[in-house]
Length: 268
Image (cartoon, rainbow, N blue to C red; front, side, top):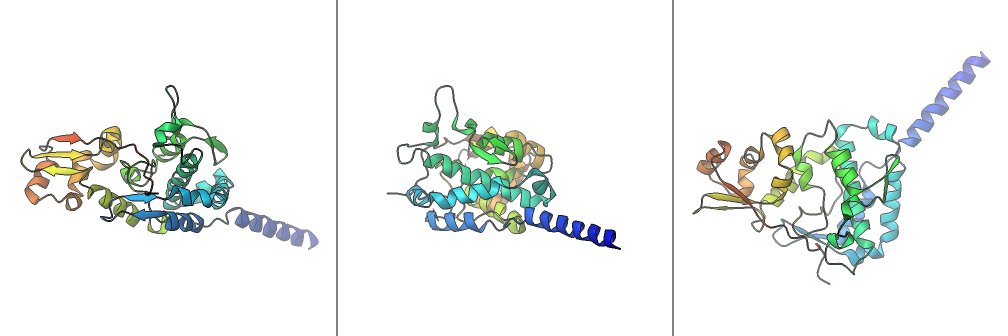
């Protein structure tokens, strides 16, 4: 009888430890608090600006949030559902990008200033995540794009590279419970930006962000191709039915707009 009780107590203890190990805030409230105070949508709502001076004042809170992410073990992460895992990685990438910018702010005009002739800011290894010290490239290309179950090119409108040409840094955390709606909103906002995505009626040609060129393979594999993806978001691009039909058939020529690498900083 005593042996049975001892075994039961041990099992209860192990279960309690496991629950504590997985006690992570899936709403990412700490990150939401930071971006809600330091990120603002622009007037047209298709882009956002970041108050990096404000983030610098709250650097302790940013470090604490990144530290909370670093404590999650790979086994715990793997047990979460797909949307929670994806939201976790997107938020980790965006928070780490802000951390990287703060390493030299305000003495930089672009994230590219953090690199050099033979180095890239995206390859700098400085983020502790899922048991490894990682770079931004490791998170985006290894954990997000490289994962077998994240088959959604809309992640390219969620991760933010701290640049004007990049899709907006969202002023709220991504959350698994509403991830699909958030990704759809990010995509629509980005496609509504006529400085980056527009249709020229006279030339009958689309000019779109270079993102669609750089990551064309993702759209080919997971969305039927760039043109099909754009046709499925024709409302945001303000395309009429005739153009949409031609676009689905691959009959609309596509060119790419220039990418603005200047920092997405709020005016000081």
